[in-house]
Structure formats: structure tokens, C-alpha cells
Length: 340
Image 1 (cartoon, rainbow, N blue to C red):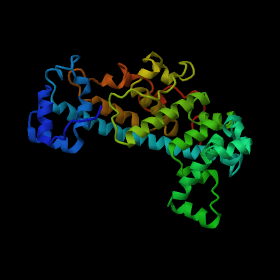
Image 2 (cartoon, helix red, strand yellow):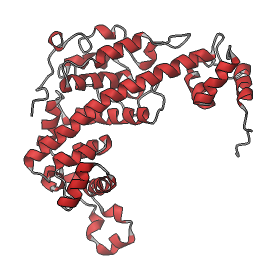
Image 3 (cartoon, helix red, strand yellow):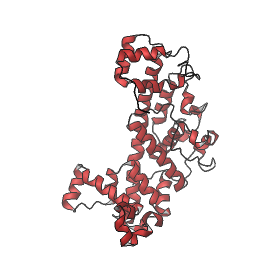
Image 4 (cartoon, one colour):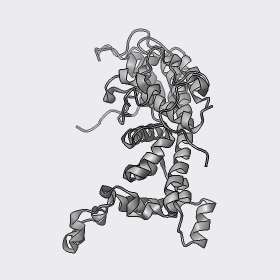
């Protein structure tokens, strides 16, 4: 089917919203909102207000101001989430570079640093006849692919310290410098490939009992970061990449996550809880949890929309994870980040 709907001027878009049951109120203000965010972004925030019967459109009492309030709340939430993820990402860069650097300056190139499956090339790569018939990337190991992408990122970097290594050391960068230019996704890929000893040393620094658990959390935070960084909606989003829930006895501060919905139904709260847990390892005196509590207390609840849309459990703010200074919280299950 070919798309045949016509372009509509802003006034006609407002008329369409009104016909579908949305109270517009001040038309000039509604037009400014459409100018700022567009029709599909606005209606995306009003999705919870839709009636069960599509013919009805939206629930009685649905106002365009509900979308405006949710859009503003979501913008503030994205900024706060990005603030937390920046601190976690920067800390992870340092920790990966520190742990691998103790092995060697170029441990990231050494196969001994990684699990065998990360450095193993496909069987057909050894057959030159077959290999020449396939795209080059199909003959590479996961480690090879990672090195290629990192080299591309390094070549594009305009950072002064990267230029220094480019000119003085023929572009050879030790791991403790290289991590500074890696994206979170590249750090996650590197961590996924690390051998058990090195990956656990990094997980221990954040009080995470297993590599599998930490990798799951990092994948979730990378997904959330990408959503927030591209200005997409965080409010009311179910996590495509949900964090694994730890056994309550292993991570008591996150025991309440075991009472949540199934992983594919996770709301944003599970990612917020994981971020808070990791932030406490990075900075025990972090005020991020208090800032989040203030923001959630200002959630613009209306009609079918409540803060529970984020997956926030009842009484969350009194749970040990979010309560007061570190002295009043349960300790992390393993060592916290140590001074270097």
C-alpha cells in the first residue's frame, strides 16, 4: 500500500487533534507546541490517553497540556539520566584501562586477555579459496572487528592527546589512554570478551558479583543512553534490553527488583535502580538519587498516567538503595571502587 495522506499545515493538525477528542485550549499555545516538537512526538506522549475503541479517539478530559507536561518531564528525566550515565561511563573507561593496563600497555591486542571465543576466527577463514569469495569482515574474529572499529574511532579523533600519540608514537596508544576515546558500546564489547579474571576484577570494583550480571547491566545502560542521547522518549518506555535481576542474597540493595514484572515488561525504573547502585560505587556521596526523587515527585500525573508508568514500585524512595548517606545504607556485596 502506498502512503497517500496529504501534508497538513499546523492549523489543520490542531483541527485533527480536536476531532479526535483532545481538548486544545489555547490554539496559539498548541500551535507553538506543535512547532517545537511535531505532531508524532506530541501524540506519542498522549498514547496512554487513547480510548480502547479507536473510533472514539482519546479519553474524555484529555488535554494537549497533558502532552506538554509529559514532554517537559521527559526532557528533564533524560538530562538527569545522561548525567548519571556519563559518570558511570567515565568511571568504566578508567577502570578498564587500569585493570588491563596492569597486564600490559597493549593488553587489548593480546589474545590472552580474552575468552577464546572472542578471538577465534571462523573456520572458513583458514581456507583462502573460500575466504576470498566472502566479504572480509566474515573472516574476522569478534576481537578483530572490535580492533577495526576502535582504529576507525582513533583515526577520527581530534583530541590533543590522540594527536600526540599519532605524531610521537606512530599512533600506538596504551589501553589506559585508548579507553578515553571509546564509546560505551565499545567498552561493553571489550568487557564481554575479557577473560574471567579480568572481567571479574572490573565487576568487583562496582560491587557486582558476576560478569554475566555486570554485562547485562552495562548493555541496559548503553541502550538507555542511546535512547536519551537521541532525544527519544524515556517516559513509559519498556526496556528492549532489560537488566538481569540479581539474587536478593547477592545484591541486597536491589532485592526489590525481584518483585518486578518479567524482564521484557521492565519499565525504566529497573535501569534507574542499576544506575543508582553503580553510582554509589563510583561516588558514595552522590546526590543523584535525591535529585531523581525530587524529579519523580513532580511527575505530571493525570487520568491514566502515573509515575508507576516508569515501573516505579510503591514506596521506592524509602528503600535502602535510595535512603540517605552511605552510612545508612546496606554495604555493597564486594569491594567498592578503590583509590588508584
